[in-house]
Structure formats: C-alpha cells, structure tokens
Length: 126
Image (cartoon, rainbow, N blue to C red; front, side, top):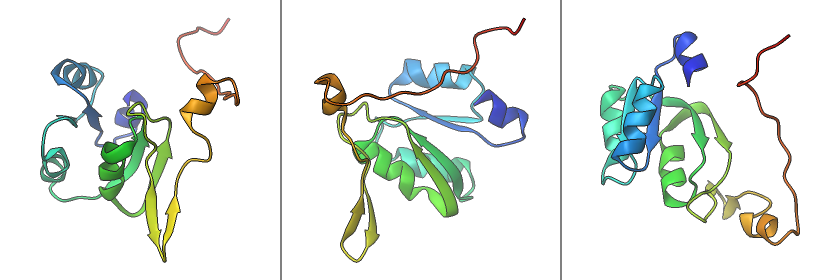
C-alpha cells in the first residue's frame, strides 16, 4: 500500500470492521471502506468518481472477492492471495467457464499440499 502511494497511485483499502478500516487508513489508504457494510462497492465507485480500479489484491475471497473483481476496469489485474472467508473467489469468464484457484485451504490444513512464498520487508540490509 505504501509503495503504491509513493508511486502516485490512489489506494483503496477495503477491510472488515471499523477497527481494520482505521488501520488501513493509518497505513496510507487514500480511501478506506468496510466490506461488511452494504453497498461498499458503490462507496468505492463514488470515491473514485467512477474511475475503474486497476489492481485488486484479494485476500478474502467468496462474495467479497467477487465484488472486488467487479470493480476492475478493462485491462485490470487481480491477485488472489487467499480466501479468509473460507471460499475462493471465482470468476465467470463466459461460455460456462468459471476460473477458480487450483487448490483450497482445506488441503493445506490437512497436510495434503504445501504453499511456499517469500517475505519482504522488516529486515535491514547489512
């Protein structure tokens, strides 16, 4: 979020609950909304003056992730980083085709799959 702001982006932070919304705002979000409130997507559209969203980082999934994807404009990018709602975000691309993540968190919790990633920040060089 901070890197996007430094690069000049308008950053919309979407979080669940007022405390998390305030936290996101404190981290530098230009606009911060609560996805548990009805009409949060309309609040985002209004705040952006109907400018399309260009990037979505989805960590919630399910219905909220789907709503976030609906905010993307033409050529927008979506990064699905998890689904804390317990359901992955799915995308209907037409012709009866639905795109969804290839593995589910249940596989990780049952030890049937593993996920690896990298961590950045929080450490000084030297």
